[in-house]
Image (cartoon, rainbow, N blue to C red; front, side, top):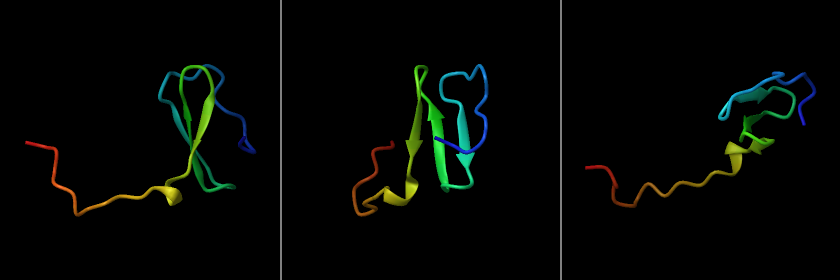
Length: 51
């Protein structure tokens, strides 16, 4: 986990950026989850699902 203190009473969806690991950390309501956006893949050739 991060090298800094996390908020003591976070709300669900609370987001914190860990500068040391260069990673977002999100609170799910039960635990903190790492989100590595460097591994995110997006296919921009797909049709839009928006109206």
